[in-house]
Length: 614
Image (cartoon, rainbow, N blue to C red; front, side, top):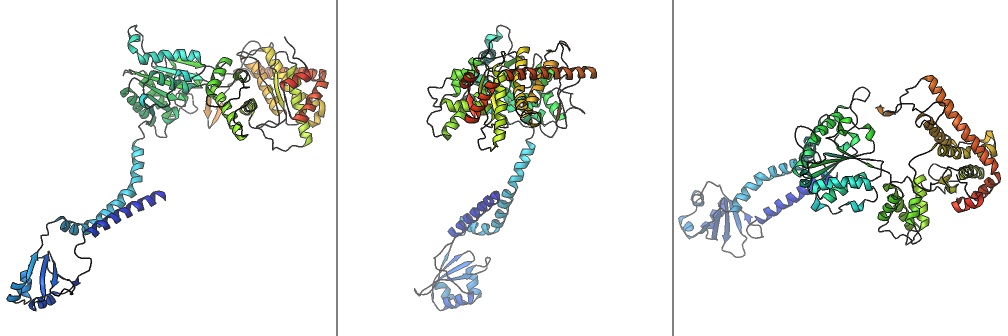
């Protein structure tokens, strides 16, 4: 409808312009002359009443001697002269001799316009209509013909207003060191060529989502000051076979013309998955696109001055041909940030935010193990939004700590109405987790306990390690399982077997998963020995992911189930013993939760005492 209105407006303006031109062509007085026939004109001439006659083509303009008389106009045949006309209609010789006759030249532009416009105007209007009505169709055809062209987002050095450098990337020190060599290749390739070193053809950035892979690629482009071509892996794949390969050729062609340049393919696993693993054959379009990428990176034609950077969080599914030397020569692993990295990341994202003086970014880094750079940026942003919602001028520690829980568990659901019985059951459940977790020697300290609903959880017990952990020991797993079973055990002890609720379902599911991993993945079972069970591979069929293949007998599967059950039974026993030994402290925690709904670490330790040490 909007396009139709625009077309109508254009046509209306054209018609208005034509009408204006025709109005300018109007000659003579503003008074319209009287149209008479030739016989009357001849009679007036013979009577001597005509003062002057102006002949302009086939129009005869008559001026009478009487000043009060109206001007007259006569139409004659174009091929007949005015003299012959008078003679044929009986004008006397004397009258013709005394008549003043003026002949106007008709070769001016007005003559041609006045004769051509009436003939061309309908044709012009039709052409204008056809033009506007076919524009959308032509645009669709152009897009159809441009299927094989890539549309990368090209960032030129002189146009890069938001230029990123390594100074904008906190942490990831080893990754930046690896990439600084790539920048050196782009800045001064001769220095490396003199040593016989060749520029790497590809750099693969691997890491968990949110660790800064795309940001590092932008920083490399900013440091090297070269054109940067950015496309996503999914942008190559279309429903027509061969389109993706054509786009790859077009992308590399553009990059070669702008060399030295960087091509960055985000989420390369969209086109770079292992070939020939799909059920019923692979996807022809995706595989042809991958084949073209392989050829462009290391084929017969040299790919000079172009470095291909790619990012993925699924390196395990990539085709081996992509990972061989000559294609992605350098693989850079971006780890989860440690406590030092998290503090540096928080300092960068705190710029521009009025953070309160009582806020310690170091302590905040200690409370956020497992957070990625994206999580930390989101944390401070949520804190700033919360401060605005509370009409504050600064972001205080309260907003920041609440944002930690919001990022981890979701927003608070204070409006959720629950009965007094359900509130009491939630309080006992969370108190069970807190008491068992507090007295587990190898467990993490309990930071906070709350019965306020967040996300899908009716309540939560927040535990955080005091330092970053890269390995989990058997003792830590056992203590973690005991804490998971704490809520379930307390519900059974307080309310009886028949009043057990659906609340512990998530705890039981997580505990079962951990116990199964201990047996099948980590070799932490004396009965089954130090080996893994189940070969994990990815196969997608009709949208479902089959990610484990049984490589053991049914008898072994029976033993696995039995061992998992024994591990969970031991965790349940330890949780029961801990709760029974600290029943009085449990009741105090419940009373505090029913009264305040949320208690912090200091109050927990005041009720339960100091944590046992190893």
